Length: 214
Image (cartoon, rainbow, N blue to C red; front, side, top):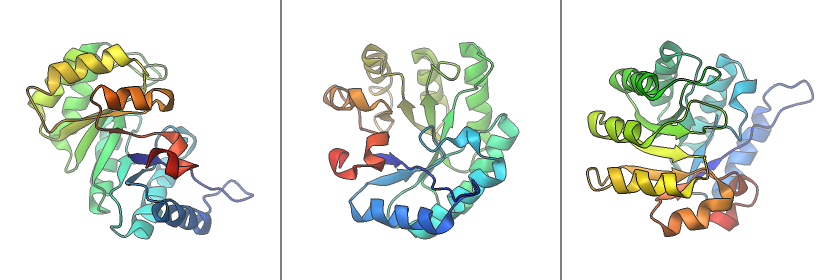
């Protein structure tokens, strides 16, 4: 379970470093398995590139290896996303989560090409992030291709809440690549997803009441 953590701000809207560090310690003390900063719960789109990098720097420093970090590395284009991957790898993050292209809705071929370019140039393992209500959807065929062709692509975080879609992905990919992980980002479906074979989740509830999903 990777906990999507929020980012405390001060009265001026700047990152509150002291409270962020305190929050990280609070989560770890309550037994979270890992942290997932710069995701949707962390409102990554509201921060600048520099702020997103600073958030990971603060959290990586405070974690100091106590739990793994799955860092949100989604930027507006492949160039900046690869740079984020390189930076977070240098900070010691376990992996990055990258949402599929957002704002413009792209088809499967373009989504595949986007992730393939990043995976071929990233020094860190990648978790695909499917959130079709806000970004281009990642279909089962694309997940299968990336899982089989890109060793750096190690997991998918699916926030669609679509149980049949998750079942199809697991049925298609797991027999061919047993080490590929499936995570759900939909709190209401967590138990059902785990029962049908998901490896874990990135659920916002755990950032407020960690004991519920521990």
